[in-house]
Structure formats: structure tokens, C-alpha cells
Image (cartoon, rainbow, N blue to C red; front, side):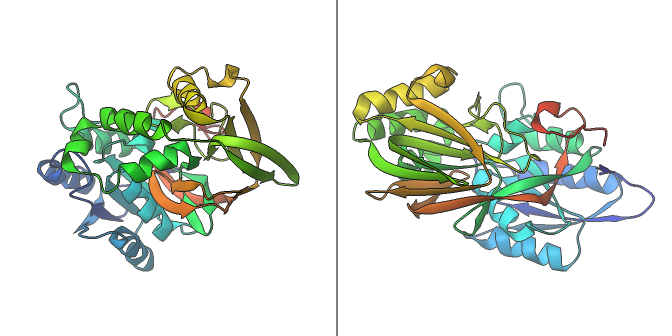
Length: 323
């Protein structure tokens, strides 16, 4: 692993800020974030996004300018945009949690805004620098890269119900998702689905399918408990059933971390996953709406460099953190 802080030569970084992604104003923390990087030998340029897709273009510009890293201030959707600009390059991704869910930041053990953490961006940059850079896998869904997961069915319907997110919804955070989830579950019906994982075909009437590159799901639950960021595989969780009862059983099982005991839950692992359904099912990629089925996902091994803190959970990787 390469260290993030190197005083022997200047490192080049871009900071991409989505000023509207979270429930609070991130602007007041940015000077301290920049100062910390500069004191550790980084030359910094800062950009603010004003429209969807702009973070991808800014990441591509950083790649063309041969920056060493891009630090993102935003939520998981903004992170996904940057991932799609950096995938396949040597430019490292660093994340500062400025969104609502901040699932990737939580996966790495970074502090997110709470009564105990009033300056999460500053705390996070101090955890990442000094830290290290590590190569990880990405997933790809119908050509779009994803860092964390693809959801099909129930959770994607909830994602659509939450868009566009109002400032009130962002402030309510998880509560807004719970309300949308119950409302959505009331209208859910299982859909006949053909799932092809590598060469194996599986037929189910499904409520929810989650295809994971990482472990954490929805901020607090590790739905794919054995997923590794560098194992060259995607984890597939399938929840079968019909109607409101099945949808609530799946959702509550995930929240209570009992889904692995549910007989209507099945788990697989593979390199390519195809989802076809009799009726269109909603799809999201890293928490952002992404059309409907059919969808084809594949793993792209060692596709992205990420900045990780010193004390990241070793269970996220197959290879030792000392390597």
C-alpha cells in the first residue's frame, strides 16, 4: 500500500464538493480540510458542483491532469459519479462524508455527522491523511460502475419514491426512508425473475435482490457479511415472496440482521450476474435510480484506488493490510 502523506514531494489533489448533498452546510469545514492537506504536502484545487453528472466530468479532468487523488465532499450518489470518472486510473478516491446516508464513509469507519461529531469532514481528513492507498474491485451494471451495491425491487422502489430528495427528507435521514419503505411495501408484489450467476440459472418470484461489492447496506446493516473489496467477486442476496408480508419480512429481517435465517433468503457469489424479470423491476446503483430490469452486472477486479484510514476493518479485504 502507498502512504497518503509524503513530504518528500508534492502531491496533487482535487476536492470535489457537492454543496447540496447533505442536511447541513459543509462550507465552514472546507478551509480546515484544505489546510490539513496542504500541511501534509498536498497542492489542492477545489471545485463545487452545480448539476447532476458534473462530478464525473471533474473527476475525468483530475485524471487528465494526473492528480494523485480526488477527495469528494458529498453523499454516496456524488461518490458514484466520481467513481465513474476515475475507474481504471491510478487516481485515488478519498471520501469526506457530506451526504445523508454516507454508507461508504461508514464502511471505512469514518466519523459522520452526529451530536458526537460536529466536524465530520475535518475528523475524516485527519483519519485519511495520514493513511494509505489501496486497490479495490468495482462492479459494473449495464456499463455503469458501482462502488457498493445494486438494488433491484423493494429498495430501488424506495429510492425512486425519495427522488428528488427535499431538504426536509435529507434532515429526517433514516426516518424518511422508513416512511417511504412502509408505503412502498404496501404495494409490492413478487415478480417472476430469472437470475443467471455465471453459468447457473435461478428462478424465483422476488421481492428484492441486492448485488454487493462491499458489506454495509443502508448505513448500519452488513447485508453481505462475507463480501471483500478485493476478492474479484460480487455477493448476491435474493429475497423471495409475494405481497406486503414478504416485503416487510425481508426489510425487517435485514434491519434486525436476521435475514440469513430467513428461508426465503438465498445467497450466491459470482463474477457476472444477469437479472431478467417478467415485469420491469426498479433498479438503483449506489443508491441512485438506474432504470429497470433487465440488468447485467459484472465485477471489474482491481479497478479503483481508494484512500483508507489506518484503522480500517481488515475484514473488508482478502489480502493483509500490511501488504
